[in-house]
Image (cartoon, rainbow, N blue to C red; front, side):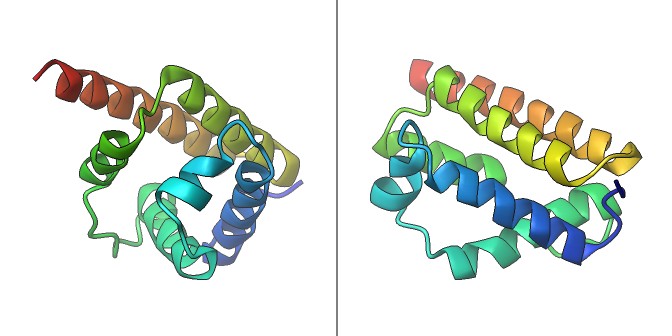
Length: 126
């Protein structure tokens, strides 16, 4: 199995990941009912984000934390939802890739989920 090497690999990953998320009734409502993402527009943004994080390409300019805080203001992004998200993310990576970038992206995803949960908890207490 090959490692994550380019944006095409990242597109395969986020495409598989979102197929899993959207087929899981425990979390898909966030994307279909709350945020109402247009997947064909959302996937390239995610590829840019992960490409910047893993391959150092740059180009992602959104405020990831604020985006999730805004979603949390509509519906509570619970620790359980983050566990589901991480489970599907890790499974998608493990199914498609192996290597240092594959491990790096899973660690980054865990770090992001942790920081977002802390920021959401801080928002809740303010």
